[in-house]
Image 1 (cartoon, rainbow, N blue to C red):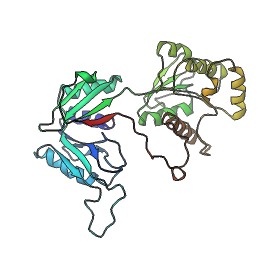
Image 2 (cartoon, helix red, strand yellow; image 1 turned 180 degrees about the vertical axis):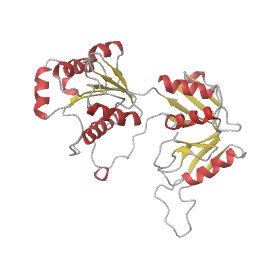
Image 3 (cartoon, helix red, strand yellow; image 1 turned 135 degrees about the horizontal axis):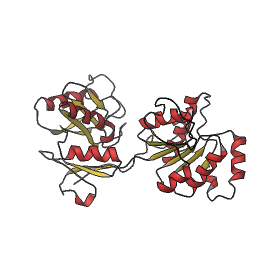
Image 4 (cartoon, one colour; image 1 turned 90 degrees about the vertical axis):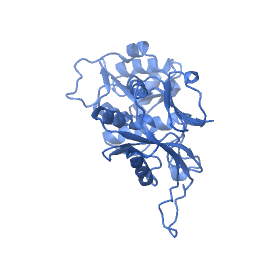
Length: 329
């Protein structure tokens, strides 16, 4: 998706490097990445992103470098087994891909995308699928120029992850969650509870009570709250505030005995059954990184309506892909 590669695209633009984008706009059969998956290839040969998880990237890189060298933009067919010899077995995901390879958009489209991602604003991005493959953007779908066929992607604002308590575990979760595209906010009212440097991976750290912050910044169904302070005076206020709204994932750290005490304290709170406690999937790990992984794994499973079982034991599609991009016309 554009969000995955845009920091690279923007860096290249700032340094004067041309960039070609390869975007997955169609597929005949199964595949490892959703429609809208994007690779960005710079004029110095460096690149970011993936269209298939690895089996077509070499073909796409060559085509993108041709566009950078002056070849016209085009929609090309790409087959995962296209580079194999006749006697070599093709991958099971050997459906043909349709890939648009074109220069990255210039201003004002580039700036609008950069601003929307930086400010977590929704933006619809459309590229026409006929030469010269023009780009257009708008905050409202109906305001985009009508053109057929075209590929449209929705850049939605990042979901928020509130971590209650500026702890070592919160620092690890914040760092991992940032790489998952979450807008992480660490809330802790204790003025002396300050870690040196930036252990929270660039997350926003606010010295305030969580319920006061949530009152000023209402949460939505895509947002999550994880209580980590292990101090009931802090965690309980955060959980009460989180349960009063539609946050999709509300969890609290602690043993089963600790959670049982918590449930007794909060018994009168509507929706108390929504608290995931003890937080996390049963991965069996004991150190902080294992715990952080377990909590984030549960968060991802819950927001996708999954139970978190081993893939080898399930029969549902491996990936749940929302309606973030598509072709019309």
